[in-house]
Image (tube, rainbow, N blue to C red; front, side, top):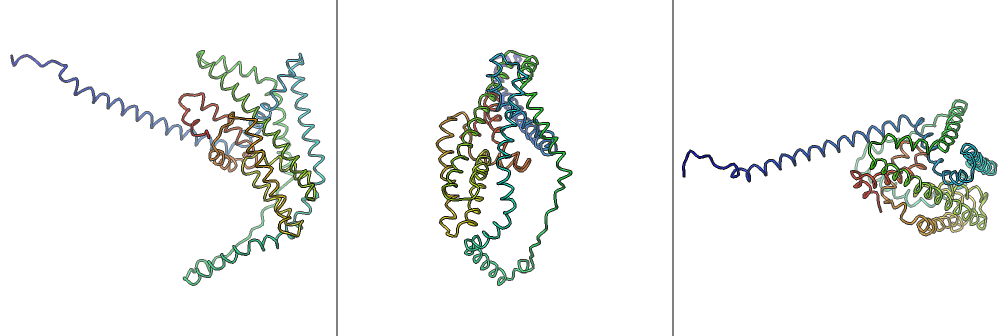
Length: 373
């Protein structure tokens, strides 16, 4: 073989190809890491904005969800040759009238109970102390053991009670009325111009596939969230009526008030029923002398809630809202911390919307899998 002849290039290819593939894979991994870090930064920025701009964002979200709730009725009225602006105005007027009538009917009982709340708490405190006496004795034993061990910090610790500042009702009332008016107006305009806004958004989408994806996401959100709202509202009303009937049969005072509160708290999964059971236990301890009779209202309500949550709601919803309970609890904690009571009420509908979007977008389908039961 002539030594001046150069070796063929193919002899170096098996060595160079793995190095090139490794370099490309490293670039891809770096891009994925950068993408995830940017996603975390964007999520943090969104949460930061939601926290400090809650007075602006909450009315828009409430109006959007009220519009989704009324949208099926809006379509039926519009199909009967009724102008959209008249249909939207009639629906909002009817909705406000129903809420106002319920509030007016329950206001005397609620005001009376609020006035009697300090007395009810004073009457229930001895019973609660009797129930918690074993835990108090155990804590005293733990404290004494700490003192024997020389825990000086525990001996020097003091409990300082600070009275909360009084709310300035005169300053808060105009802001609350402005927020309510903003929700009403935004709901009206969402009902009136929602379809037009969707068509304008579709014009901005660059490709036919992107337009189809947008329509699929919007229709799924409208159908699933509307169905979720209607189902939860219907089952909550049924649970409230059943709770009021049960409390009336047990002889509890103001059963209609507690039935309405049970229906309202049932809109928040897990947290609302636990709060309602605690309230009914407190009311029972203050009204009935026997311990069994005192705890019977709370036990009966928990039985009705179990029947509603495990049988009625899954039977109607099916697998439309298939969410992981752990994801729901974490989501409730997050938005309850950010927005308080309104955050608890809006948390599950927002989680349903998030799951719908993630299940339709290919790059976000892993999140949708994590959110499923």
